[in-house]
Image (cartoon, rainbow, N blue to C red; front, side):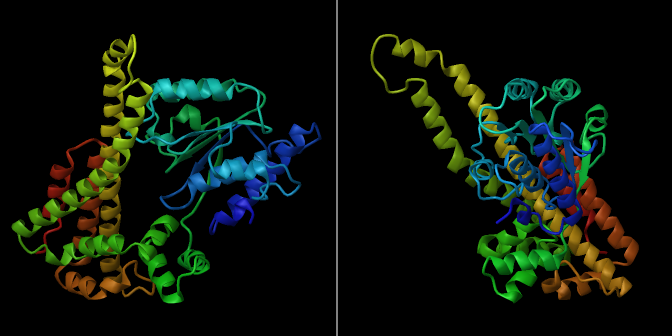
Length: 395
């Protein structure tokens, strides 16, 4: 299976990346190559679920591939990149809310070395929009003065200056990805073994996000959570109902984040304590353990940041579902032939459409988008969500 097979509905991007990988192979072998096909810095942009990080990892594998068919997916280089264990491919996947300058300097310093196993040293930043200003400046220096065998791959939602610093963006080659069509996502799910009906439903409900569609197809808890979220619009008939809906949304996100953190935090803390000598005996052990308080505090800080991000990601998924619901309301008013995102909630869509005219539905969409923006600006989730649900109250 080729690494390109993982990119769903991205034919144009695959053609561009395959040609660049072939050009990079020629460069590494000192063969002539057409100018402009390969460069040292790439920026992958596209909506959530379009496969930005998948495309970047596939390109990384193709650049390191050992066989004539770049990106074969079967050689040792491709497999180690896919398993995230390649020593020359440095992945930056932020667990918290941002990527700091110290982490970026460390990664850029490692990438400046000569490749140890593959053809290239590579830095792959999956969420470049989370780079702090100082981290972006550290990265900019590496992009402006790249070592001869270093390639930098960035992934971001858009070209907006808030996502990627203009000076960084202007020095990268752009790869734009689109939301995969529902039939392509359904085809992936059928290949995974799901029946045609389940595949079609999950592809529509996932709104072009392959990962979310897979989760909905296999996870009953995810389906139950979606059902609870999509039942909210028709229930917002009073202020009390609005506050109860907000409490449900925030509480569900907090519970999901707490469950994930409980699984990860305990193991991380225990591993660090063992590494610092907890439970050991002998001279100097007590002093070493006492001196580890700062390290443990830093770990707790990272874990808290990761839990906050997990909660916000869970909330954002719910907000995306709600936005798609009001999109379906607008489609109903327009009698559009476009397929709805939530066909299984058609009765609720009709009920809300009877009480909301198109301008009202647009105001609801604005309220949801405003809530997402408020969360990005670090407004307390409960305050932002309560303001949103109050704005969604039915007349």
